[in-house]
Figure (tube, helix red, strand yellow):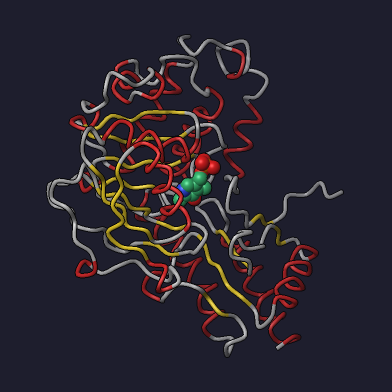
Length: 363
Ligand SMILES: *Cc1c(COP(=O)(O)O)cnc(C)c1O
């Protein structure tokens, strides 16, 4: 059994910054001033208050989130948001969904349980290789919201510019690319991310929601599904996932202080992604990417080799070389390198070198 950290290309739960893990380790037995760990103290204590407030302040700083947006820390992962969004925002209306891959497909099918969904574009005819052009869909001006996923984690397809939805609120699942680049939050009515890709451990989901949308929550919903009640109680209707929120605070601190903010994070991510895409493009067809070039994700890089046998061989040999969790999602196969914010440049270089070498030996 290995006791060494390897380069972990998992799509989620995914790699976290070493300095964050070290800080958490340092404070694991005793949070300074608390006499106990963060897992052992009241969520209403004066020691926890600066943690949840600090996480919120950091998120506000990173994305310049204006005052008229609330930041909520919820449980239930992205999947619960697939249901909570329609339950809170639909009212008597329907919502428009842009289906660009596995996660929007799943979100739409969950939303259909809660209400009426119109699919205004579905990329299945283009094998979910790209996002649509504005001319390819028509937004219903009376829709409750338009739903998108900024980065389809499984297909590795990312929006470069977001749809202009006019006065219809844009709702975005940013689970696998939040904080990978700067974003203008005012373009969105609601943007959310489960933590376990780019934010921290599983167990907390960050929802950034505009005040007017918070007001839509119907009184028929149980409290814990009700955005407005959650917002009013500052995500403390009941015990929040304290440890996960603590980790989000450390990760966002790392983004601000060590990485130097999202412009720098973006440059870093583009550089890492380019190392892999160039290798794919220069492999003479040995490696094939999935997404059309202009929609390539800088977070998830799916690729295939000439045969499933070679895919398997690549995965096995990469693992022996200390490059782990490179299998593609079970629904699509192939390989996938997830290179979130916390993946160091050295990890991507090691994978690039392995790819070049493997192609030479097996091409
Ligand atoms: C991982 C992921 C999900 C699912 O997250 P859960 O927290 O497991 O429900 C949803 N959307 C996207 C874009 C994801 O990457």
